[in-house]
Length: 220
Image (cartoon, rainbow, N blue to C red; front, side, top):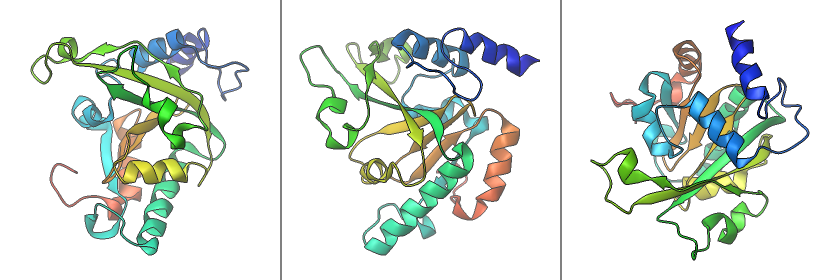
């Protein structure tokens, strides 16, 4: 079975069906996973729409595509929407990866995961620098690079609300990955970008949440 073959390949490094691993993913295993699963992009969430456009869509977190919550009621709506769709996609008690990063990071700087209080519950592993000029020279200058990091965690509804609020306020960037479901969930200050494993799964969820979609042609 093709799917089982792919899972078996990933299992050899880290993953078991059902996320029953008794150890943490290593830096090398994350790199292998990312290269096998998302070979057309790097772990920076704004790139996903362009690099995986056929499997991508965005929901808006507030009615009428409003961008920022300005009242307790709006925060309630935002968190309810985000928790509802993420839980619908991941399921409860799902083992996931949290990925973040920082631009132009160097060895003498403090990585943001070490200084942001909202990141304290997560145990991040730093990944190798990504040379952005090498990745896309038309968009970046020589010397521009990005330092990603990841942490393993569990998705349960409302467990990550503090992080979701910081992202919604555009105070930081981070996204979630379910390895078992082969899906990226990337909250932002407009809503949530989602990259599914195939077009069929995307179309299913897009229909389910059509009332939360943008009216814009580009889906933003």
